[in-house]
Length: 65
Length: 467
Image: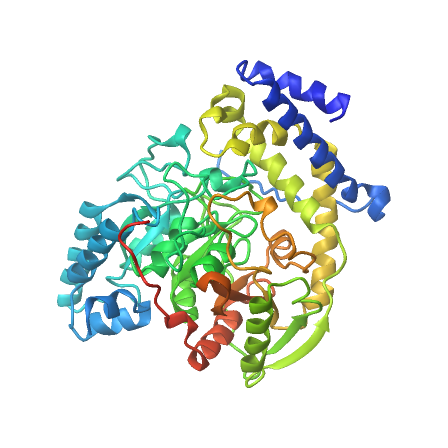
């Protein structure tokens, strides 16, 4: 468990003050695990170029005024 | 033909019985309602049975048929929906305690289209809470209890469309609608030995469906044959002003001799029975398809991408629940804090996951785009035992290349077909993943395969009590 993930986990008590210390540890560990997994997505790791755009889908509905 | 023979018939055969006036839609509906009452609770497959609506729709179907009006192949056919589709007749619970009494005053587009096709809605079927969006780690993750596969009720019916899979397998409905964000149609299809069709992203409107992940969610059928999958898909597909991602696209004609890529290392790390059944499936497919072996899955971080996207979009979809602190009322212990973990997903990770996704779509199209399908075992094992954490089960079977994450990230269709049995008498399954909007090429292959095999017609030994 890193200090950063523990600090982020602590902020979740604002949503549920009843979160136990065990819950906080589980949240922090989950955050660390996700951060580790996301390293595989880092631009340097997989050589994303500046122009590699994300998947986005947006359409103007074209409603009449 | 006895009641069991009727209950386990596929849609095509049920329609033939209705056409021949061997039974009415009301009789068929009553048969399924009785079975839902008798077996639904045993397998934790049902949330709400819609007696009144079902009989009303069945009477209408019979009246129309008597007047010579038959709307199509689903006319008078009873079905169930995963309880994440809105209907006004009952709560739409999303499988989760905080939404147990949630009500909508309209039918989801999929339900509306099935009604227009003459089908009869029987029940809202059980599901993993919030479709698994908060990272559950065992089968007991719904307020209806752990979904049990009719093949061996000590084992999970899969998730998150647990009730859809079990209800089809136990002959409680003619077919069912499920949803998939990252495996929730194909996994329960495998676990329950039924045929599941995950449509292309955008083929089917999600209006009225619970959103977990706007860029990944899809709705599709689970049924007793590939031909049923195609019939249901044709009825529910198409553009919808209420869902801008839904589009009208044609259904391509099947090829005379399809080309199928066989995924390289497809059986590496699989249970022996899964590997054996997959090889036998390839032998059957080779009688009418050209198989091209050893086609590699591009080496890209699919798992990390799909996990990050589901976390970020899921946290936004359920932001109100997370910020209310009420996720503590969820059933599965990891779900009670999983929302907070998802809530902490960095925005840059989400955007980079979506950027990687662009490259993945391109790479997958380069690898598989010239084939009608790519074939692999649906998962490397049979389904999981109830009561054991997923991450501590079957740890010796790993490292298998997996089509679920890549196929969902690219929005590609997939057909899961039962292809035999393995440990504990549990079904195994093969997945055929296609190219975008080519579902009917998959169902044509699946239909041909099912004329050569009988796994899809096997019936589980049903029980009325769990020991």
